[in-house]
Each structure stands twice: as C-alpha cells, then as structure tokens.
Amino acid sequence: MIRQTTQRITGWPWGECVRASYSAVLDIPIDEIPPLDPGTAQRLGQNQGDRERAWLASIGYDLLEIGVEPPDELAPEVLACAPDVPHLMSGISPRGYGHRVVGVSGRIAWDPHPSRAGLVTVYSIGILTPLGTL
Figure 1 (cartoon, helix red, strand yellow):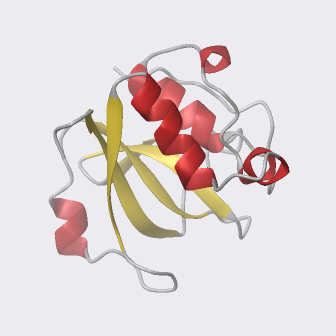
Figure 2 (cartoon, rainbow, N blue to C red):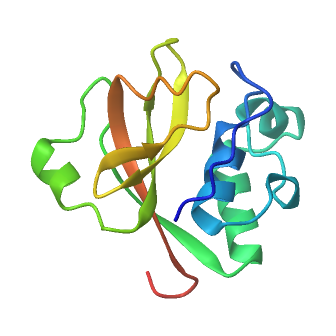
C-alpha cells in the first residue's frame, strides 16, 4: 500500500512533489524528509539530483533512473518493464512544470499534487535500491 502523502507546497521551484513522492514510496512522514526541491537546492548552492542522492545514501538507498532526455518520452516497452512495486515517475505536469509522482508497473498510482492531475509526459522512472547494489 502506498502512503498517500499530498504535497503542501506547490509550484516551481519550491514545490515538494519529490519529498511527498519519497514519503509515499518509503512510507515515512514527509517531515522526516529534507526539502529536495530545485529552489532549496539552488539556494544552498547544490544540484537537486546530488542533494537527493546524498539524502538517499544517508538512509541506505540509491536511485536507479531509467530515462530519456526531454522532449522524448519513455517508450511503452520501457514503461511495461517497470517493476510491480512502488517507484518514482518524473515528467511534465499539466501545469507545464517538472513533476514527480509514484507509479506501480509504469502507471501512475499516486500523484502528490492536490489536483491529482498526473503527468502529460513521462521521461524517467526511478527505482530505489539498497545502497551498494548498483
């Protein structure tokens, strides 16, 4: 079962969809996850992806991302290979910004945005793995 965490802050670059998605996938309260949005990373002089991976490493995880460069999109055969467990899906929201949701088997299972509008484009799937297994 996926923890249905709704992001409390929306909008680029401060929205917390990444934080809420990790809360859902890892089944931990959102307040136990540091801000992982682009705005916070930039304010701290960090890269968002590096900040995200450093936090994951601190709790024993790594992130395997399968993706393509926008504006291309993951092929249906790639989405069909997505695991039958909660994973991350990144893409473009109907609002026109980068967004992160939770998927299962390559399909959206939970959108943390209050609108629940999902993604119009998927450009990566992120699978959490125990640190050191990649």
